[in-house]
Length: 287
Length: 340
Image (cartoon, rainbow over all chains, first blue to last red; front, side):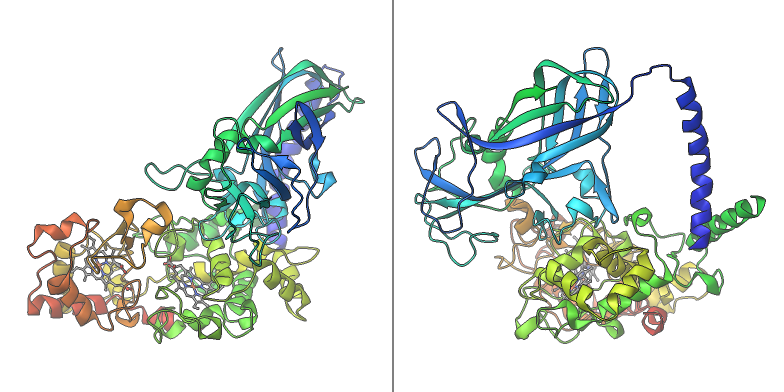
């Protein structure tokens, strides 16, 4: 144990020295700042964003309608965001550091409709400058899966987003109810016990094997801002993003709740995955 | 300062020599060692360095029925040390409440080198294997989160995890999974007679030597030394229709139906019953299968179609020689080793 510590301090010494040098060379007086991104889950109805309301499991009140006119409600909505990047017109660039280890993870965010705090992502140490574009990945890529068991938000014992039979993380998990469904969902958190009208969409997939059920379903997407995002030390700019849950079921593919509404593997999730990259929308920035 | 550097290098040198030289002194009992003719391990050791404490904790967990829903079954019930960590009793493994599983428990030696786990390759990392065993209703029928809670409530485990991993608070799943992996990673089977011959410390008998050449001609395209598997998925002609789709269950490709991961043949003399469903009790039955009883199906490996009827023709002599050779793959040193 002691020996390991000694090695560590030896390794860090040059780093400290190096960073020490760098700081003195930097002439820019502007300091890095923090950017907050809000992932606001909504249902866009007649072009009006309505705050999402989670129904209690079994409720037969159906506030939403899919593109096929089938009414439904939602008991659970959760998704992973990772590899966030901000870029600007003058070469400004910020990449949110990503790491995964037993002691914890960085750069992976689990947005959970039942936990307001989870919907606010803080990006720290963003270099001062002007940013006009946000990029991120919906889901957890190979680098979060190939390193073995990790903790923090990726802890498979606590996040309920890990497929154990075919290891990998679910990107988007949605559970709810619709009269159009004839039930029979399995492996759910909210509907266990034989809901007659349950719907379960567990969508993910981190590798592609041609002609197989393994498909890459994560989505990388970018959004241009309509105004400049200015980062300086004392500013706390806030980017407001919408996630329109109705778009999971429409857009590229109209999802029919009378069809397969018990989705638990990459190939079955493709129709929703193709829709879900269009479910996000940039709304505005508070400076 | 100078002293530290020397110490630091000393540790580095020690680590390096552990990997290369299987006989380098008593201090490296808990270091990962392998002979130089083994391939690079697939395991991510950098994320989970093996220590004496971690290994010992992993061993305790591996033998602890606390991991199952009714505290009745440990990993070691189905992966029994004396028979190279397989299950000698049950054709299909038996879980809690005597529920029969769908497959035979494979040996878990040399897991450090395996790229994908289970007969169908559904799991991509050794750390995740235990989640599957624990959460399978036909095996331990537990929830990983509940096992972690039980460990945190235990009088001994919290202190053991803190000492082992230097963590401050409660036990979390990655440390639990890492400890189990540390135990399994040191199960390197490399001390069989076959290995002694490779290292010029023993010689084959005439029958073993003859068996080796039959094996190299007829078996090693799928079961090549030193691990005696390519880890590919293929169909060795057990069935015409498939109750268990095998690799096809994971990939859902029609051409993968009936394919299973080629198993290692290390310790094969002890790992009866054989095949994914444990259908053969003896090596004689296995060799009879390859020689005479193979059946046709769309995914049958084309290699077997070179003969008509499909299979690998073996004379009575060749069968005896093959068995003699396969016996040399038994690693009694590993099975006797008190650290496991």
